[in-house]
Image (tube, helix red, strand yellow):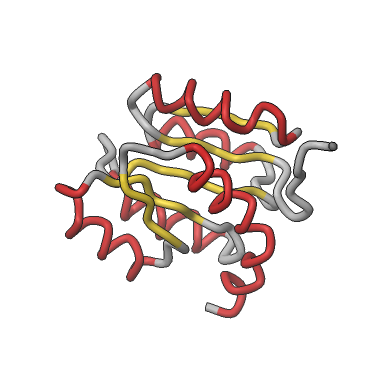
Length: 136
């Protein structure tokens, strides 16, 4: 059986300061033929956005990020391309920020610790729901 592929998403960008999260998501998506690029800070990701087309992607980001933070990053990414599906990874202690992230335009919030199949379903589901993002 072939690994599932995202029709509308060829790269998943992970922005999280925790390298173990990078490793876990990269391992989870290894069989899907979706490329994973990981960044520790919003600013590192923004540098890539400024020099490369980030259309047809999914963005996974930690609810609490250093630097400009997750909410500013969500707003910046969606201002550039409102079709980018954004999933926020949050601990239960981050519930206020998670609610603000949804108001800022995040598609979903997933509680940590991450559960492999649940996260995979959410990421793969972003391809089907990316038209939702355009309609926002």
